[in-house]
Image (cartoon, rainbow, N blue to C red):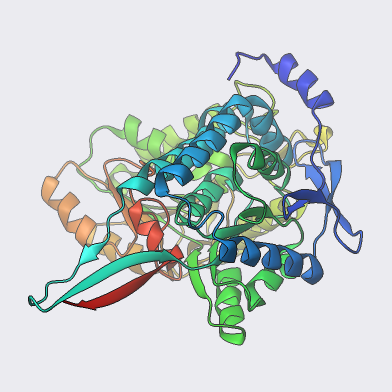
Length: 497
């Protein structure tokens, strides 16, 4: 990333070309029926451009292209070292245009430019590189057997994979799907959320130049309930990797049942507990981790630590420090490199979050601070970090995913009570505990029903560690070598000697 100033980013934003067309069969094309939808800038409320709104007919074309590509073997049958080389070239091309891709993501999502340039686009590049590097290091197996035969176990690509990704981390999460699915030899159709198509289309522009064949990777833009549903129901799609709400994840399970029983991998919602025990001493570090754990990315994070389950002996001191962090994390112009909190994705979502704040108070919670709309003169959708205190775990604000900068505080008297409340949820994506007692840290890690448990930290992450959830937070895992399980079939071959 170049060291651009706020003014530099503003100037570049005013001249940056904006992608508009879907990427199908190696060409950038309009939707067959000519339909479009508006891509909006959440920081200003203004329309950025109109984007092709694909429907069933366009999905049919993309699936047919993907199937032709797969059956031809032009990508599937390449040696792993060659697939690796081309994916690395793609990652290099993306990195070379990091600033423009990051700017597109900031413009369409409201994420701060200081984060898209240092976290989101590098996350995409790193994810593609990690999976590319793994391709010539994946070995098959030989099952134990007697001397009269050999039993081979190999992974084979499934065929056509649809990757349906959300708007909150569109590029990072895309890499979690593209990396293992494309790397394994599948043909991949990426469906970005309608709120975040532009940066994804720029990434697609660079694919063909890196040697990714037409049909092996495509981007179908459009509305989720039309284009996404069409992919879910299509008999020519062999697997879907989805990240998004639990509600839509359940819909994809239904689509599978009503079509060809395609494999569905899901990473869905969360209501992650953040436990703080009475024996902790370093409240400054804890306050910082809780603040970023719930307010980073405007609170629009699936595994955000939205339930603070805190021992009453340290609660008041911790909340005082969180108030200070809320003052530090004031929303600002996403094009300002110094800003750490940008705009909510759209007006309807901002109003939904405000509705939860009102609901919590009707349920008996106390709004300690935050949740106000600010910068309204900009036309954008900005909310300040908020805390609801005196919450009980039976309240809707404690049970439903708000997906905004709202922390709910539940007071407890011991660790057993905290663990019981933490697990009393439909979700199980992430969980954390802060304790100075090693024994309690180990006990909590075993007891918490979540795909990732952090002990004395929060949101530590790496592409080489699996990510996914228990219960209604999904099924299967993104990231790490375990992600290949979602996009490959195991084949057993018996050979008589």
